[in-house]
Length: 265
Image (cartoon, rainbow, N blue to C red; front, side, top):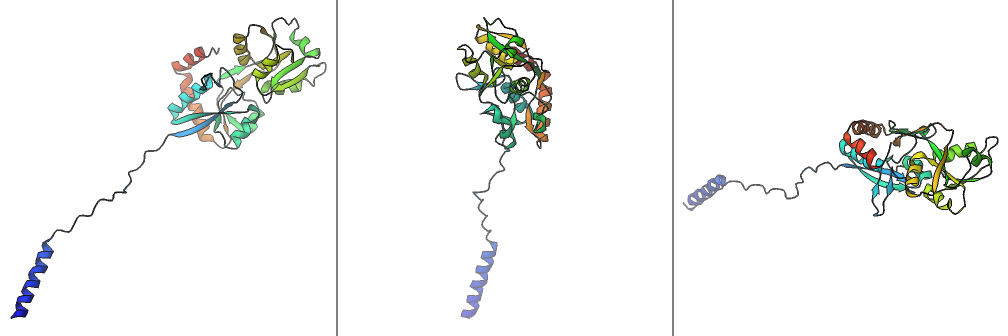
């Protein structure tokens, strides 16, 4: 009889247990939500010596300039942010090739020689090469080049390459003095260490705004150069974004605003 009672109690217990609701599984606290894709940041190399009005560091330490604002506008349209990194100009292409920077938007002339190492965007500005001298200088450009004068120039620039080649031509007697920046050459001009400074007409325009004691004596007999943005040879995706963005920018009213702001013809 006891066994019957025991079996009945066990059966009742099992039946009751079967009616109990299984405990719900606790939510996993560490379940991560998909993270939003972060906007890509690209590093733009600019002339470490400063290249107003295209790219330079102002008195407040902020990177500004025509190319700086232009490429930032393009970045917003094409889905990337831009960080600007000053680099010594003579080393800026190696920095691009070494992936220390992603592009060069800093008033770079798109020469055939450079195009062997980098790819250039569509052109956006045309420049010439000029010689700046003291305002009281009475010599012509030709006389400056043939009378043993010292001509300063920023190393690694198109102007430097042109003057190096010109100095070897018959009748040329000027001595070329190379600097890390045009600003440094212009510091030596007033004190007579050099007699003139060769540079892009865009730089000369900025120089003449600040210093009324200098003038442009003439334009070198060199073919005009186009400015373009440079990228690595294997970066076709970025090149397309820059070209597409540049096309949008040049069709937007902001392009004319930038040109007026930085006094670019």
